[in-house]
Image: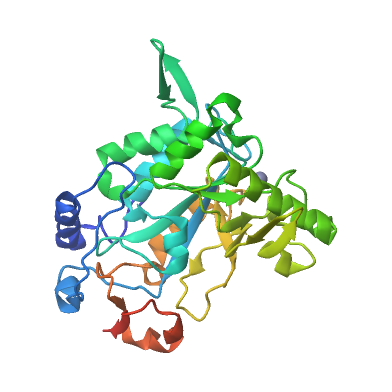
Length: 349
Ligand SMILES: [Zn+2]
């Protein structure tokens, strides 16, 4: 069954109604806000009675998009499928959060839902473009930002944010670069450094690696000094020989100090306080359909969504409280307490 999951299966309908109520009562300022979460300790027995089994020791997904176009192809999601992705994730109980929040363990989604982050690579026009309509500039309703915001207006509890990993192309409309960066910055989107020339960093000298990473940092400071870039998106996932240069280095007077480096594939990950957390080198999942006949799309987004439908016990499920990490008691030994955000404690059941 395509949409069978914790939230929509009939036996959990009470839990679903609770989530709907939470969603309806969340006060949201525009599309950029994510759903609010109760700072009080969670009522575990209450949640269990409602069919919600929190598991904040479960895995999360960071999804990876490139182009959007009318037709689906390699590294290109069709407009139709992108809209379908939003619907599917929403129906299956996923909620969009900022990439940095997911990395920092600052996860504020309602009880019973799972955080997910979007990333877009290569800053092409189909991710964010302006069009003129009756002499007025507006966001193209067929670009990713347009579609996310349209969906966010209908479902404000879904969240509306993404990490844009930029190249010098910067969405391919040169005259709107500042306007777009400003818009994304003000509306809760984030930026990652995707280098200058999209070279395989494995094959480059230390100097070239640092140039590739430092120059976009310098460029962004010139476009909008308020934007904080904390992430490197490795072109084709290629890791430089001197790995430390992914995070720290300098070139021609610009130094950088980044927190995370993004890979290209291909698996979900445990959050920062789980002993299996990958640290700074972060796996992602390409958004693509899965064909079980020929195996194409294995380890892509549909494959993993199906996987979590079959193995809900491995999926991160929020308890709706920001002061507790709630999970089955036997998982406690997997927790790294020193990684917990201040004031947060583990609650087992
Ligand atoms: Zn790329």
